[in-house]
Length: 225
Ligand SMILES: Cc1cc2nc3c(=O)[nH]c(=O)nc-3n(C[C@H](O)[C@H](O)[C@H](O)COP(=O)(O)O)c2cc1C
Image (cartoon, rainbow, N blue to C red; front, side, top):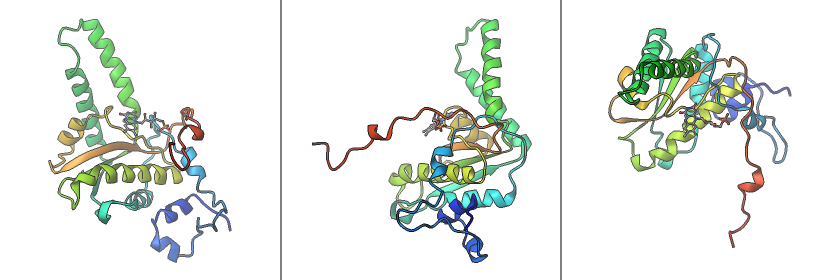
């Protein structure tokens, strides 16, 4: 049976409705490769996007996959804040730039300040070329808040993979878009902690893959003895 990119999303649990509609499946017998493992190698951080919008149905599939990872005590402590409004995105970009500048020495010569501003604006323009953003948050009032730091990044990882399955790019952003900027502009209540923010959109070309360590460097069998 021919497998499509959505197969992974069903495996991630995204689509009771899609399964019911008789769509293809990524499930394979043990040892049989379903094709979906390719996704892990194909996910890459994307920092420049086309302006094409992300259709609602794609966004929904991606978010539905993001809510499927294991969580401590099944607490599912997330909020996914989706931002698509152009004016809001622009306000977020502008606030990032202000916060960058606030960290520079007060006594920077004007030329140096202008050069830094230009370089920062260029850096930010890549992320902010995306038509959508998702802020992954955890709720400090969840059942087991001390485990939120486990549960949060798992959702973000699933989200990035699901997006890749549908041909979209993401990048797990922390410092490049300061938390303070997202909190202020998006009026995020105190109780929610930001895990990351990711742009979401069609990549303006896939970047060169980042070098990865060899599998052997990570794996220890049986014990460290
Ligand atoms: C905890 C964490 C924080 C990150 N913060 C940023 C960031 O602030 N800006 C950015 O562009 N990428 C950020 N990244 C993405 C990494 O730079 C990227 O995953 C890494 O360079 C490997 O590249 P790859 O994702 O293409 O494999 C972050 C990733 C993680 C997991």
